Image (tube, rainbow, N blue to C red; front, side, top):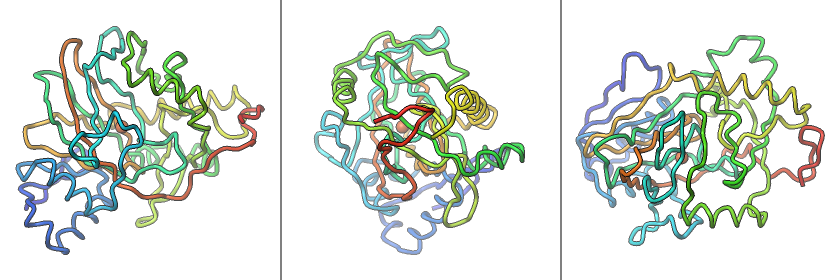
Length: 312
Ligand SMILES: [Fe+2]
């Protein structure tokens, strides 16, 4: 295998070329890959082995794997794989464009107290246009904050709420004007679970230090963010709007254009990601593993004050 920078312009990300199943039987290689993941946040695997078995076995180098709780999203033959479809009926209008499979900037599972440490993506069905995946480094975003903002936000916590499709949580995505055009059966099922109380509000710190390096992470997921815990609603909205505008600055984003044989690993505790979607009428299918872990800083919000109101 060969290790390269992803881009000279980016302070995160690297590329590993030519990795095979034989390589990851060597514990020194596994250790090197793990350190690259923590150091760079994102690894693009290219021109190596690329199939469902290797994707699962490579993912296990970084931790235990989770099986997704929504059965409809689990691959029928490989329970370790989560299947995300774009162009399967659900449609959003984003800045006037109709897109399937569009998911704005977010961290996975931030609406739960325990968030997965990462995942490996592989495109199983590639459309002839669209389907890029965006990444933003939350360490870089923290470093770019003015000092007075760093001091102000250091001890704050963010409340996250999973909202139903009828009341989507797109408030803190200032660069996207998003409208739900059509849902699919999965989303309708999810709405029923949300309305049934399956997802109580949770809290995560707005800033935390990466344990291995001490580097601070601006831990804000614009999708699912609701408020700053205990802050007046107007003040909370203003601060989250400012921070969301800062963190989703596309000048700091890396857009992965998928090539045949690519797999991408990211650190979900440190990188935001987004699915850019596919044009109406196109179909894309992505298979993802979920690498377990618990940074142990999230918790379910129970009868605590949120913006002056009790949330539960
Ligand atoms: Fe995601």
